[in-house]
Image (cartoon, rainbow, N blue to C red; front, side, top):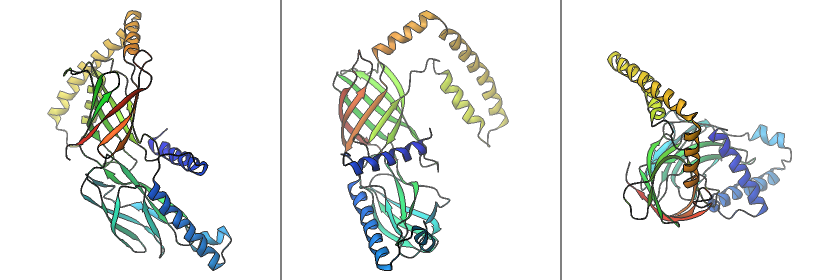
Length: 326
C-alpha cells in the first residue's frame, strides 16, 4: 500500500468517525470552515433552484488543480511559504489548507492560477498540509497533497516510563523533493538511564496524521543483520544514478560494490545458522520495539511506545521537540 493511498484511507476513516461523533482529535478549524462552505453551497443551490447533481456538475464542475513545477511549498517554522497552484477555477472557488496551525495571509485567484502566502508558527512540528479547492454552488472539490510541507532538522527527546531515553534525529526528509508524498527518515538512539552510549540504534520512518489522537507515529525498522552492508549497498546504488558521476568514481564504486556483495553473501549464510537465529530471537524478546505514537502540543509531547512483552507492550513517553534549523 502506498503512503498516498494510506493517507486517503486514513482521511476517509476519520470522516466516518467524525460523523459517528467518536473522533477526539481532529482539525476543528478546518472542519468548521469546510462545513461552512457546504452549508453556503446548499443555500445557493436552493436559491437557484438547482436540484439535479448532473446540472450542478456541468455548471459548477470540480476544480482542476495541479502543483506548479516548483513542487510543494517547503518551509521551516517561523517563516512564510508561497503556494502556486495551476488549474481551472470558476469565480467564487474557495481554497482551504488542511491544517489548524497554518494561516493563509493573502491569496489571489484567477481562472487558471491560485497564489497564496502562508504563515507558519514558530512552535510547529514537521507537518504537511493538503490544499482543497471547492467549486462555487456545487461545492465539488479536489485536493493537492502536501501543498505545504513544514520541514527542518528536528530532534525528539523522549523519556520512557521504564527509565529508557530515546533521541530521534532526522536523517532525511524527501517530502520537499517529491510530488508523491516523500517520507521522513530518522535515526533513533536508545539509552538506559543517564548512560551516554546508546545500547540500541534503529532507523524509523515518521508519519504525520492530523486526524489521529497521537498525530505522530515512528514506525521503527528491524535491526540490520547485515552489519551495515545492506545500507551501504543502497547508498552505492544511489550514487550510480548520479548523471555527473565521473569514470574514475564509477570504477571505485564498482570495486567497492563487489566487496559489499561478498559481505552480504556471508551474512545471508550466517542467517541460516540455527544458533544465530536463536540469538536474534532472544534479542528481539529483550527489545522488540516497533512503534512510537506521540501527541505533540507546542514543543511538548506525550504518548507511548510498543515493545516486546518483556520490555513493555505500551510504555508511556513524555518529552520535548527541538527545532535545530534548516
